[in-house]
Image (tube, rainbow, N blue to C red; front, side, top):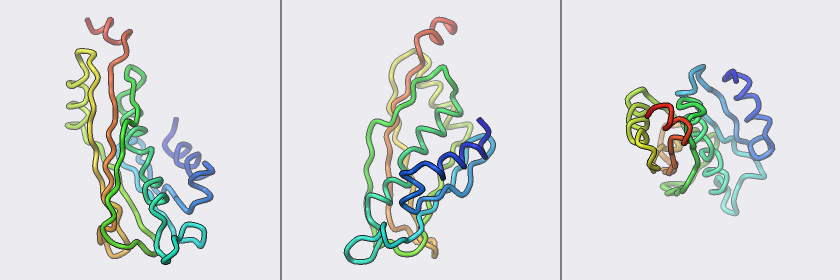
Length: 154
């Protein structure tokens, strides 16, 4: 799927559309994604800052989706765990970026070449308009080479 169609689909996806989450960039090779969360009355918490669930949701699918797009159909790729650390109150528009490089993809391929499962932790920051980190998110992704791909390789 073209990255532009993918981006549009995510922006129209109700969990993003109705919470103020907006995917602003998806590179053609799916190795860079930028997401923003805009402050809205319905995504504020009691003290007027971003609701923590919205902050986590803005980062939720992207490591899994970018890895899946880059490794292809020969791999199982699933989110396995996630955690968020709130560092300071988030106000206004906040953003997160996701970047994959060839070295990391090579590492993932090597770790799964034997057919064993591999659990990889990804980390990224959510920053405010001043570039200050308001939260740090970690996601653990499960990866495994599918049996039919192992047979072709072996």
